[in-house]
Length: 603
Image 1 (cartoon, rainbow, N blue to C red):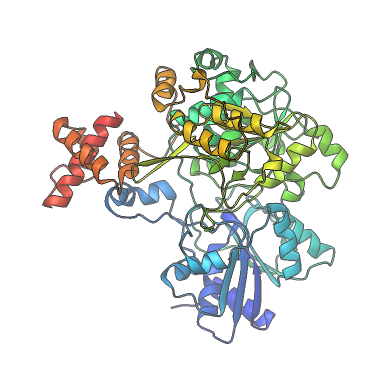
Image 2: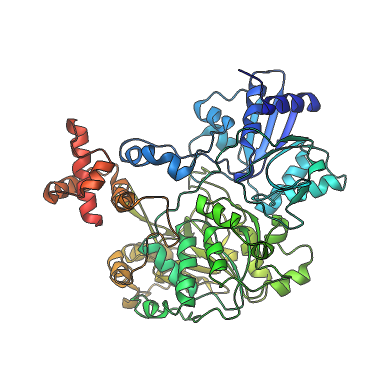
């Protein structure tokens, strides 16, 4: 195989470091995959060389799985996820071929991708986003790699990853760090400007700016269902005009952004008034005449949509959005590339030392971040307000704390600010429904002393400064009614509720049926900001979600098969797309019947 520019740079790195490489690698999209893979391959073939990588959020196209998931995803993989190359060290970790002389540690992992992977679990570093910089500083990297966007002949943009890279480069300029900067240029990476995002050409010691370029990783938008829309509508009642906003990626983030747009257009109030769930006293409404200012670690499509709609327009020193990093869908990247010069000037990529904390120019940040609402997601919340966001009860890390705790700390430090934790009230796996509101969890990501506002599809619980018995009762009010009695019994056993406490009748309607009845006529979209799924795939998604929930539950699967027998001619296009129009063999016939049943139930 002919030697490439990437191979030559890898050889130079090995020579420059004396074969002991401590590589600082950006979180997420900012990894220069061509260079990184060349270095990984070079070191893998040299037992005398050592490569230690400190990074986060290694992006991978999802495992296609088997059965229905593979039938849906495999034919559309490039369209959905982009032709993003496989990162070699991740492949080696998965197939057990990572050599002993290569070590990878992450402080945040792609959600759920490294469960039950012993090496990844053992080498995970628990650190808040703002503290990851300190971890890197103590580690003293001798190489930093970065994907850059071209700006002009003299400058490049850090683009998607000013988060930690900007501060590391400042350290090097000040003589506090000494590392080689090796970079790869990608012309499709949006060039974000501003002083923190720019790098001079002469600051890059090793540069790959010509040759083949890879497609950027594209995050597939998940459908927004009734649960997410309800959460978004509730959250929209908490956001003050003229305030400050932070939201994250995913279906709930999209739902919150969409609900704010409905509110701004005067279309949310009628939906909210029809809610069958217990009232909570929060009633922010009306258009955003003053507008919102955004300070967020992650710039997501929902925030960009609010910016384009004129809702995010309150400026701080001429800037409406300060963000630390981004990774999203291809339409999001296109939208960033299409911004006018004036629009670009109002979006600034910053280090997370600016976005995620108040230290440094604290007085100015306090003035800017008025009436802040920091909206984040969780996996579980206890009745007493402890939050679990990143880890299972067995201690397996799902993702990482990221900047969630940073923003919760800010909510308690800023006058008028609130932390808003969102989560669905239940989870369905293998046909079994469990409550996400629990009595206890062995690994809390955020301790109960930081309890503030919690939102499920059934409403809002304000916990800040409340006595334990009040906090417990308010959490019960937003729990699924099927689990309230068991939760009450556990709280009483711990002495946190009076012996004569009973769940009020008005809290007993927290059921999926009531939720569907509330929102089914509202015309809320499954993809408020578009999708890469085509029309047929969009019809398939609810049915496949239903099938996924029943996996492992024999009785539930039999019910779907029987439903399929009664379905007659199902959606022909859907069956064609899944290659199940004329199934052969018993297994495929059963899969086809189950899909027909799921299409009928979901449709």
